[in-house]
Image (cartoon, rainbow, N blue to C red):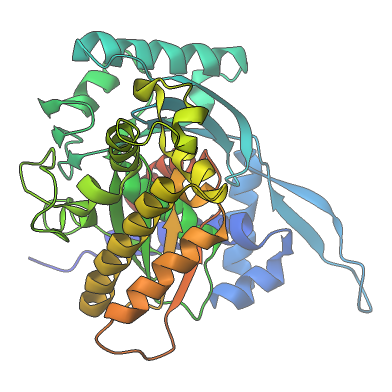
Length: 406
């Protein structure tokens, strides 16, 4: 087959345009000469692209440079509200929705209790209606919404957005992306919630010095995701990062996945609450019982952490055990992956630095090699981080497919 030079030239032109646009998003305000130098392309090429972006009304002039001699260069910036992305976090306890503009800045957000996820179709229809109503209130035309990313806990099939299994929801073989797309007038993408979280968290903490980040989501369940450079490593089928279903205690309780002693079954927010419910039946004077008003069904992980901070013995035992097992799980992942950084995110990390310290001590105790290079730190603690990550995943996908309206 002959080499098609015209197609090649078109691809080069498209790549240059997307690179200029991305440079403006990430490094603007900036002038034409600085863009050319940053991207190693000619100033005339930049000038042609900039003129086209002006015509499409996706960039604007923000004045002249203030330094140097001679004619001051025009400074360019993205028009932040030229288009928007929606992110939805379908959490087991809470639904969260965020709308971000072109630069990735949050425009608006909302949340409400998740409620009963059955029947599945009715629940998904409710999620769609909630999102569409929220966006409509912002008075943003559908043509300016480039898409909606949905984050869902569980095993999500790569490419199709199908829920293979979501133990926290009791779902199996649900064509979630297809059901969501029906009735939504812009592209929809479904991603595993921890993968979405990792995309957002790693972008917040991104530096040139960090090459591999392991992001661990410690919440109602436990999951992990790997970021190499700025790219999400999904694995062959998109289900990489199931740290929560690594066995850390062979004598432990049965996990929803069917195995025994999974990390999620002994150290997740749900597991912590369940252990506390059992304990207060034998320790009626425990602070946990006081905090829940003797209503065992109302116990959540935060109550257990609060009781531990108050010096309650049973609560401290639960929290210390959870931290120990998380550290063991992390050591296995670090021994295997050798990342530069481990980010601990999710609701459990909002309970103070002592929990992080306990996890770090356990992890370091079980590492095969202690290089001193590994950085372990808490994430942003932003409750909308997963929703923002879902939006970013959608945005990154549109970038990769070259389907932005530029």
